[in-house]
Length: 88
Image 1: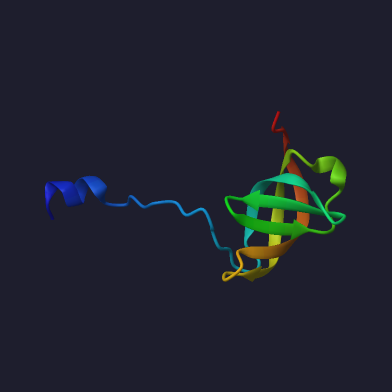
Image 2: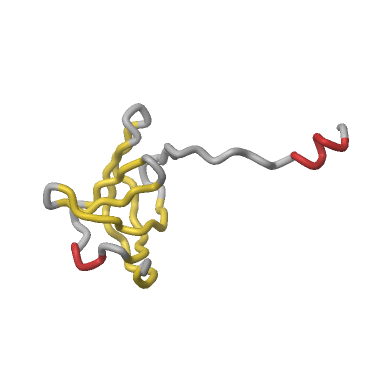
């Protein structure tokens, strides 16, 4: 392997539209409420969290993915726990 190949091994570019699998547990900041449903945005991906309390908006929470559409970069999740404080 070349020196450049060794240097770049393991590097990857992040996408603005990450995808998730059903049952993935991830930590996100809940970013707002749309049409009465709490949402989290991860880059351009939007995940609805209908059972999250709106008081947790702008806090770090753990959610479990229940549905995900790679084509639209949208999904739905259930609230697991608050794990952090405000983003501000």
